[in-house]
Image (cartoon, rainbow, N blue to C red; front, side, top):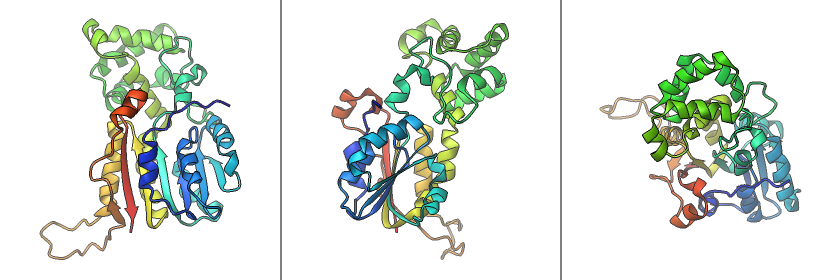
Length: 312
């Protein structure tokens, strides 16, 4: 299976893992296996890699790509939110590093039948990262109230025309069910002023992003999983997270800072009395960004940010 995907910030991420050759590492978003392959290549026979992905195509493709190291690799089809439970199930209590690449894979974007793309007008409105779920993007577009659609597009798509888009979706679906990327894109185009259509990039990009985030609960999953993942790290272990959206980055930045300094005592207290102790330190005070060369070679890397936390 050809699971085309160029791993973003690949070498920066692997370098910041501070790999221990005989350590145990987790890739929480296997995708095409790019970060996982670079990790396992640097491990000795005593090292181990555990990969998570909820996408069956990703698991199959990563299995092929990592086949040379099959005796050191364990793959689990599950969301990284279940990492602690799944690792416990296979007897792993602590790990030396975790990688999350939160971007949508090129394979998902470029495979029309997966329904992530707005560039193929006949593509279905699917967008499930795990096709075992029954709710799709089509479900959301045709069942959410106008208020819910507005909230989603405004918050997750950060689209200034969210109110108009939400209103027009509701009007159009009263005439016929919205089923394809083309159906939805036409509605979005009618909702945006002509001047903005010329200068603002593809008009459907923000709305499609918002629906994908909502459907897969991407922000909630990240926020609710961060502390658990940090708790899995052995002393000196690191978690490296690549984000592509300002809200994702904010969650990671805030979560890392809270784990570094969890004290809730008032600033004027002479000593800490809350009893909350630091779990480590933030390695990246500012996020690591792709080089100009990488951005030129891979346009999808332009919004990427890497943040790193080390367990004490």
